[in-house]
Length: 308
Image (cartoon, rainbow, N blue to C red; front, side):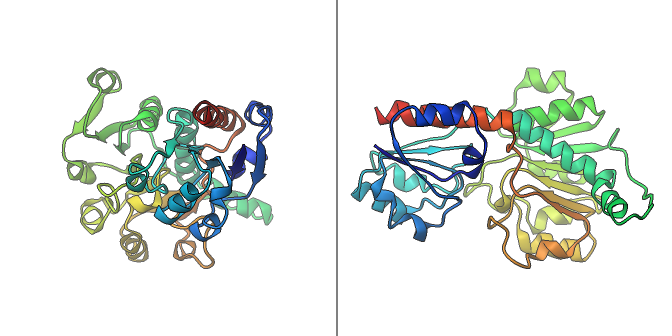
């Protein structure tokens, strides 16, 4: 059997996940994703399975795969918004992801972004690297208010850490774990817009779909405090980028910190690069040794078990 491997962190991090995959006697081709559909369409039918990242697996890719040998799509990660699941449901193609393997890592990355911003870590390091002794004034996060939109696995880990930091916690989701919310003193809302004017920080932890696309839109920006800092470790499409750019240019929000972009790798001269109150990391929230091994093993097991 032939397998296509496109996720770069899987390829770049040695460990049990690689040992298991290469022990099964597959013919394995490696490409460095995320791949666009035009790159996948000519080749996808040659493979029995793919371990993918955020590659563009649209209707045309699925059709080309099914004309050939494709049987299993094993997503290395959680989000399946790049896979046309509507089209998949019409076929016998099997699609799997790896929920629950990167919760802690993404929550840690969220606070890495937030603390780096509030403590001016990146700016201060640039001064020191240029041999300048400039001491900026930062902010505490203690006793501030955080809004967590999406109280799933990652959202819960962010809440745990927010509670430890002494933040006041406001959350929105469709269903609540009442025991969890009571333990961590979570204020729960049935309407997401009700928490917008109460928070200093916003954490986005939703999947991207038709219901969540551009959930942070013109109406949301109108209700936010001017001092709000938005942290996005989920999907770029949750935020209306044109509204975001306008609000940054008009100094209507204090900062935007993101691990995700609309197109990855980043396009040249991305408009977010013009702002010094924006921090961007290249989708590395779960890119560490521990998480890569867990996520990789889960993806390989999904592939192996379903190719049988």
